[in-house]
Image (cartoon, rainbow, N blue to C red; front, side):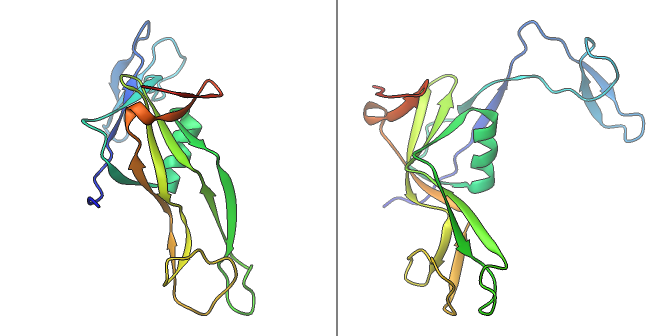
Length: 172
């Protein structure tokens, strides 16, 4: 198996029919973009056109749960067959006083603005694991490891099982 490689995703700005003016914050001196069509001088970034994976998509990579959650909320990444799991994180006396919530999925699909869908099979879910690498479903006194990331393996483009417009289909 190959080593994990870094997945770099670039956000693309939608500058079509838009204008931004570079101004400087009077208190900090930091530059900011201001939309002259919007009242006030608040920072207003360009709208998101889409994203693209920089270079060739890595064969094996990881993606943090919070990064994936943000990408899903921005609309450029989809989890396929997602489900939530909750694991105990408290003490032996009160195992559920703290809980870890993880979102599992079969695949993560990046909607690349230039390439089209880039699909990754989830090979390991974010979860709480014991020393043997098995998910911990009940409180245990054994050593555990909480992993807040997905381990991913690239699905070859000819085999991409993707969700496009709410329908499953093949790209290739």
